[in-house]
Image (cartoon, rainbow, N blue to C red; front, side, top):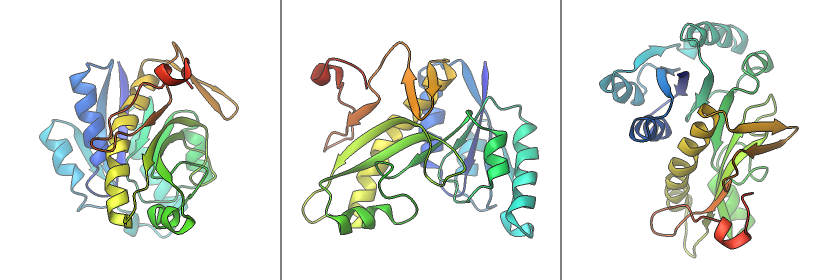
Length: 227
């Protein structure tokens, strides 16, 4: 049974998706704790209501990133995590913190990395005139919004989209691919080879989000293999 520790800053909708999927699919894992850097993070109430331990490490109480990250790491480690999951955790982490959890920390980013790292990704996509946008689950490295990609979902950019409309569809796609990627880790099915991540036995690692419901399409029927 693997321990998952999820970090949030706000509502934590991806955290909710992971908690629900782990219960529904009976993963060999448990969400040991949900930790927030803000005491008013709405996701803490959801976690507590589901019997999950919660904690707050308020970044505003620390003079610098290093001291905050050290305190956060102590809190995380008290739950003996096998995997640390960033779910809307709005803090830039120091290299030392990232190295501490190398190979066992995942993040979801609202773009098709390496395109549009950082903030305001949906506006970036609209400004660039791209026809597709999406979300990426990746292992965290010290380079912001980079790292080996585990799964991606492709979302169409529609005529008349604004950042809010596009963000809503991308978030639906995140709720599909993030639990799937975490489950693969829990099941010991992910392998890292440099920047390439493979799943064994193979499953598609990229999906077209259905325009109505962001449902994944089995790309094996299209490509003949998982990618």
